[in-house]
Image (tube, rainbow, N blue to C red; front, side, top):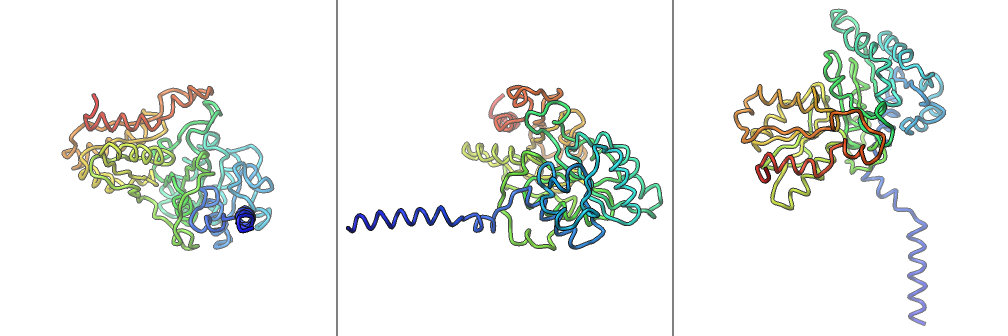
Length: 359
């Protein structure tokens, strides 16, 4: 009888544990990047009635990646606006609305499509404050997925970090974690000038630990300030967006071999937090940059140039190595796609090369 009772108790306990979800407990400490962006949009639209969202499928369909889920039902047609497939058209409308005092959030279904609207992003938005002698602000956010996706071919898998961070008049942020996504998007929407928010499609469903502070409606992250994700004394790894995850994975693997990497999450590509990078390199005396974009004129190239022009150059014990995507249009075949995107072993190999562990 006692044994039977125990079995019944275990069965009931198991059933209860399956019936009562623990997701609410997890949600208190974790949030996906998608939910972080969604909550940031919701809070800023609630905070300021001048904020509105426009783009393809953002309203009734809840967004191509469900980032705008529920916003149309809450705020209606005037503030969550579905557009035709006309990036140049709706980006131009959004820039005009920003010049008129509104705060548009212009979503590109992918930043590859922003090439259709690049004239408005650069010539209409980024240059107006300067060309008007500071009289006309353009408080607009251009946001959407950026960088390598999966199985979508060459026209849909490229990083625009170097493209847009090249241009004065723009601020460019590239979030990695849920905290980054919330804090940087909220800061971008509140900024008086154009901000490009380069999200990552692969990271949308990724959950991250998030603090109570980051869940506050008043939480914003300063644009232009990097975050040290992991401290170390042997070598500095600098990355942004999904490449931060790659750098952290490589750092964990190398820690098992006695190599402690300092991992810097850039968060902002323009302005670039040069001081944090320089201080880290002066401490570790070694540097590897990690990105998913192409090598020529990339973010890693810019960081290398800044280091060469700074006091940190004299502290380097070895040449800087860049880990980047392969210098070809992205193949469609999965095996070739993986070969074109940096992997953990590529970062590990680069670190060992810099530290002269391997030749």
